[in-house]
Length: 467
Image 1 (cartoon, rainbow, N blue to C red):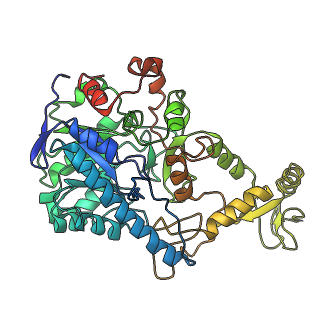
Image 2 (cartoon, one colour):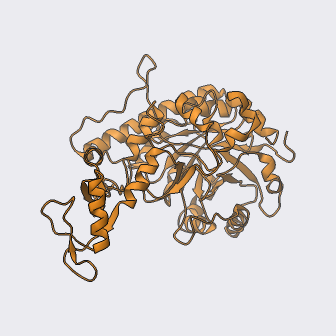
Image 3 (cartoon, one colour):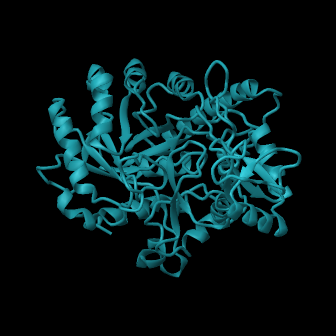
């Protein structure tokens, strides 16, 4: 046992202060979270597009049959509720009364509140708590208190927590069981970097977490309420000075990337194998997500293609003005776009290389793509089922007009399509592959030598030694 690490009281029983990160869209399901709880920790079922099963136990493909986005959105919400309920029930059975089961919700997903209410309504007594991030989930405390479950907001700064506490959480303080601090530079998936922070300059998490504890103390939250450190956590021994530290109060640790590579992890074998090949620097913190958030993923050909697409981009104006004195004569049949001389030359060069279609962005720029790329972008935008509350790629919004009021952005991508695809056996090079920035350590950690893939129990036991 790693020195100083003590069980905490959570969900009415003693558990290890080790939380499984709730990766969305079937990358965390009942098998991994049930096993994590059975090993004495807090397992996390993803309630983001979870899988349901037919009577033979086969995964039901999430196919959308409705013609309108609004109707497809209703199908999506139903799939989400049914899938998450099924996963929670199975995880609870696997846990056999040990540890605890949480669910994880992305606040910016389409219909988030309805999904959360629907799942909690049908899983009474099975779910201990709800972790929730991506956005400012003010209503989280009210929903959790109503269903008498704990809530664990995911934040990336003391300032964000202060705003949530003052406006909403202080009214349901009894159900706040932990605050998850997610490192906005190093965590996998969507990250909470603010405009005031430099994406290229990661900050030490210690002073940020210390500031969070001070903010919690100002609100009268006891030091026994843990702060869960999430993002870039690998060996507990590297966090030795955090454990039993009076400045920080009670600390727990969340592991998102390491549980991807276990026997119970539901991700396909190709994805697991790819994790073993990553080097330091292979994870990119980028802004292509249609959520508008920064996010971290493997810099594979899928992401490189998005980087290249944004580089084939020029600004335009609707009339000749300033430097924009040259009418664009490629990629834009019969329309008037005025560009600089240098950009005209670049556009002609891209056209000659096969990027013959120019697509407008919401920022008065044009990106040049191949006919095949344009077809995919247009089809994916048309097939939108409203998986986000606000989608930059399709301009869907979860509001009365179902629109963000902005032009759809071809520099982004359909996140629902790619995450469903990679989780269910799609090409790991041609899909978004979320991972934390410590993923390169699979290759370096002797625990995984000779291709060893541990069970969840073996992984938890290993973590508990400090390694």
